[in-house]
Image 1 (cartoon, rainbow, N blue to C red):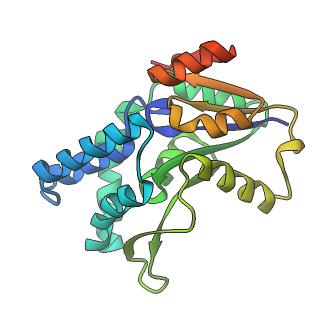
Image 2 (tube, rainbow, N blue to C red; image 1 turned 180 degrees about the horizontal axis):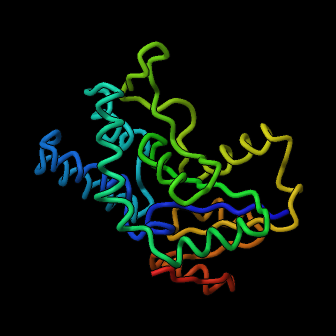
Length: 222
């Protein structure tokens, strides 16, 4: 059996689900466009430079979830999937996932984006496991607190979260003949270096240069 891990934003999706969720809320009049877009740009530049403070970013990104009931957010998310996400799901990405599922690989999405935004996207791809940043919620009401719970699924944190998940299944890296990770970003180099078959998907310039140097597969899904 193979282990197959997929990054989500700008890898399986031809866009960024975090960004699209913010745009959706701006369209609803829930977020201020000028403030949100300025902060998003600031964080995105840090992400590209490899200097992103994930805790500061999550503080900003998760706060809007805490201002609304879970039932209202769930209704909005269904609309979000139709208008913003399904148009970003390409045939090549679906075919790649299906190729691995058809041979009974253990598949998971591993993403820094929070599980509220990404849970339905994983189901859209038919991927049964999701390793994402977890937004903390009240155990009684289900309302989000605006804070993350546990270790964010980002950079080296992705390795720790994957290993914890594998342990919960009674597995480890050595349980698999081959392990794959598909990603577009140099921020994912820790996990890309961990698997036996790293694949750079429509990679940023830093990852592209590294993949060429290391002889890694480079793939385009666009």
